[in-house]
Amino acid sequence: MASKVKNIFLKVLLCLATIIAIFLIGVAIANYDSIKSSKDFISNVAPVENAGLNPTIDDLDGYYTFTTDNDIKVMQLTDIHIGAGFISKEEDKMALNAIEAMIREEKPDLVIVTGDIAFPVPHQAGTLNNKNGAKLFAQLMEQLGVYWCLSFGNHDTEAYSYYSRKSISNLYSNKEKYPHCLFQAGDDEVDGYGNYIVKVKKSTGQITQAFVMLDSHSYVDGDIFGIDWKYDCVHKNQVAWYENEIKKLTEQNYGITPKSLMFFHIPPYEMLSAYNEYRDNGFENTENVKYTYGDFGEHEPVVFPSMYNYGLFDKVVELGSTQGIFFGHDHLNNFALNYKGVHLSYSPSIDYLAYDELDKFGSQRGCQTITVSPNGSFKIEQSNYYDDKYQPILEKEQVTMSPYYE
Image (cartoon, rainbow, N blue to C red; front, top):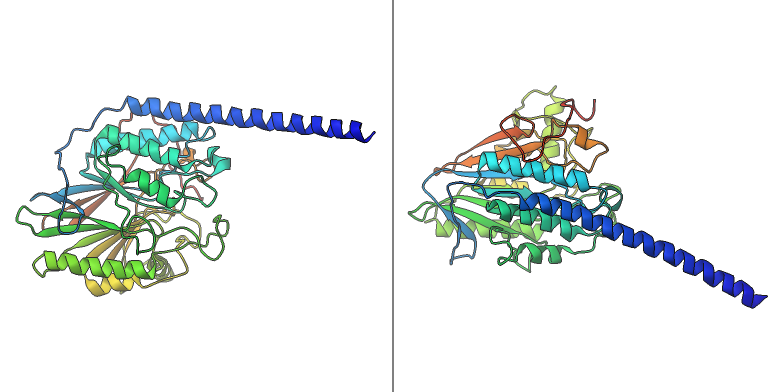
């Protein structure tokens, strides 16, 4: 009797193992098909024709440096959210399609992505593999032939995804495979991956602009899966690194503090402070806060920063170099406020995936271009993807331009 029960138990286990194996094989085949579909799209993308500014490595500090006596055009993209799984197959192609169309039309000298290129959330993407999303974006950018760099977002390397921040950092640092990627992992002694600078110089050697990239990390206080929205921020030793780098650039720049712009993913706490002050004043400007442009798309509290603050904004004000801070993270926001003399700005996102049926909404989707002049000044233009000037390879999806939250 015991032997019969044991045989039945083993047969049940074998059946379960077979079912699981068939399911996993099916998922692997479906994910392969999804990635192949995106790769097929990318293979049909033609290079972008532009002015062709080519950065070089500066021997003084090892940073990529553009040399020009003319304007330089930067495109900010954020929250692209490439799932690279069988569930996100169509949304991934929509995202790649949108990016291709906007870059081709705008012809930027440099694309800066403020986080969340990948979105390996299994119930929305169908995979835990965050490297495939990163690869697809990198392959698209190389096919376009446009220089690009990034700061990491919380979704790029989830606790449950296959690959660590270090591993994805190594991927982006592969100059043989991705020669147009200007990402640098940064100092090992400073928290995070991707604390680095891209510089702009005149032919005389004067630094006209420094683009500062920082890692704002992911989650804190045991919220490793991000369920409670307990977000991290730029850490104390990163603030010290920033101060030190600005001082080094000042020495290079004949004692003149260069202008700079800063890019990272999770908004600084001061964006929440600025928004609250503006809202509490009846959405009218105050002494500290000036509304600049854009829509407040998220539900209250509208801005979702870390509750920690290690003094980055205060250091920005103190040093007087950084004129603007650019970020993403809150996918439906695309507004900007000037707070205590510093421009704080969301960019329109690309995201088709993170919110339920977000692919059917379009008012928040687009890009932001930042044109920097040789005198260090800059001007910003936000553009919606559904504008007629953008003509993608695949037909644009039908969307409503009504706010996501009515």
